[in-house]
Length: 419
Figure: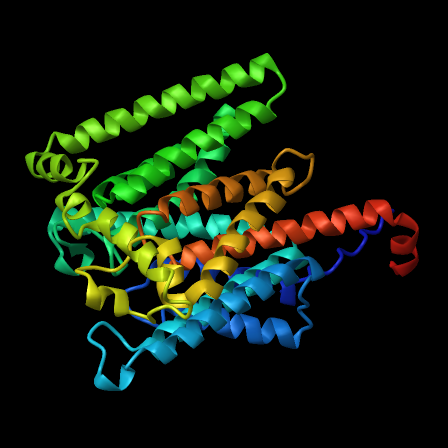
């Protein structure tokens, strides 16, 4: 007599709505590197995702309300500044109404990312993994475009990949680079080799963008990340490991750059771009002179000049996000943008060193935000999609931290409210 074989449990082949949402979130962020036209594909994906998420009950955490208010007033300043523009005469650079519409859309995108990642903390990692996928893809395209001289992927002899400008392509890549750098510095040695490969590809993309802002942003954020991890590490062995891996990584970057500079054409362009002050920086109406003149002008322009108007008066745009907030968003925009910047960094700082599940992401996002705000002193970043993504991730972490503290201070209330 043989024993009866127990029937196998049926395999659940259904896909939950949450998994579908996570997959669509990955696709949305992974497509964010394609910004050759507007609206970009990721803009449409975010719109679809937001509509579905709201229909399924996505709520805005109370802790995110300050960011919503500040972003709202920032955009109100931009809308009011349009009244200063004679737009009916036909603007040369672009339509002011389209400009403020893009600003408003990016602010809404930031709020969406804050809400959806605060709802499920694991989405923070999904977003960053998608940024790595996007970074590797656009880096490969940028390297190929530069090597094969594909005009659609280049601008002024520099790699721009699927972006409009090398000065946006380069900083975009810094986001996945910093995330990969933290994995390399903190994970076990046998697990970090794939991250080294992806990071090397992204470093090559940053280098070929020939963007001084991207180079400085990458160097600054990596140094800041190393300092944060060194302070956070309590053991001498752990700190020695950080120093060792950091030095090995630095040698790898130096070797990669030496190989790139062995090509005469690359070396020639690098020599030109590596100058700290270019002719258009220190000229009579160069970048730095425009900053000084612009801030003086702003004292008499409470409503600003309006979109694109600074470039009509001077040879180029402000190339300073704080000056641009004054020129395009008025005094209201400047005050709210400055408040948002320092408030976010201050609120996020405590989450970097506390033992939380989202500590790693808090460290990455804080370093990236601080670096982007620093480099924004010499470049316009108010329409960088990845910058607004960082704002959203920052406030998602702030909301998670607020929820965690609320649950610790009101355990009885939370236990009664739980099913």
